[in-house]
Amino acid sequence: MTELIAGDRELQRIAQTARIDLVVDVDRRAGPFESRMLAALLEVPRERFVRPSDIAESAADTPLLLDDEGLATISAPHAYLLSFRVLGLIPGDRVVELGTGSGYGAALASEVVTASGSVLTIEIDDFLFRRARQLLSGYKNIEVVQGDAGDKVVSWAGYERTTVTFAVERIPEAWLSAIPEGGRMVAPVGAESGQRLMRVDRVQGELVWSDHGAVRYVRNRGREPYVEDPSS
Image 1: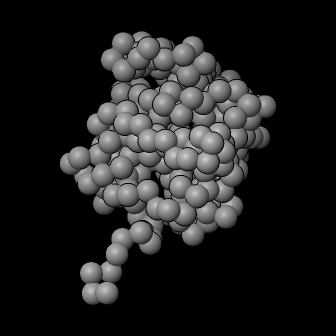
Image 2: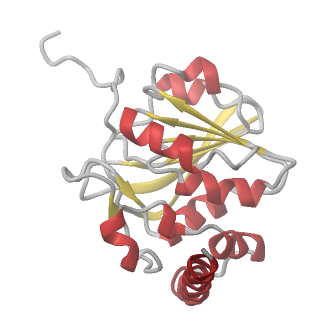
Image 3: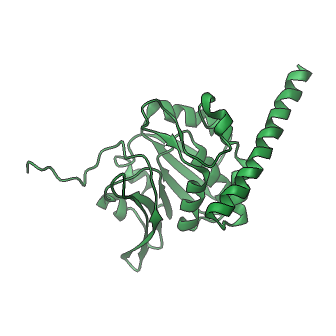
């Protein structure tokens, strides 16, 4: 048993060393990022959130599949930090994440907002929801919910910060209405080949939009009530 424990600790040491290289690579290629965000990248063991077959790639700054169909991915680490930077995420924030995946993004957000903040994360896929709930069970400031984010707007309306981890062709009006005064949403918007990372702020009752560059995310798997019926 002692040998097994020692072996496990050695694997943890190797994984953390690999994450040091990841932090350096992410900050060099996509930074600069604030120290608390880089610290989150170092602290959260990404190898626990990928599929077993992808553990060897877990410290690479690349997206990895979470299913065989390509419908769900764990984004490249820099993508999470980029969204957090655009979102302006700081300790004490209450943030909602639409699209949990395996839970890696929520774990990173938890570290950034610290124990004084909280994370609500919503996942449409039942298998991923159950997996994420288990992986995130040790995080006291994270709540994992199963369902379509569009159907659960009432449960997350009013959160000061909202991050969307899948692409939408247009942000639904109900989502925009859920942004409170002083609140902010960051989402990938557009078709697969032309997505832009958009930030929406509510300032004195008005929505203020800003474009933060080209991105590529998996598509929305939920209802899209804002798409018009061509037969109508």
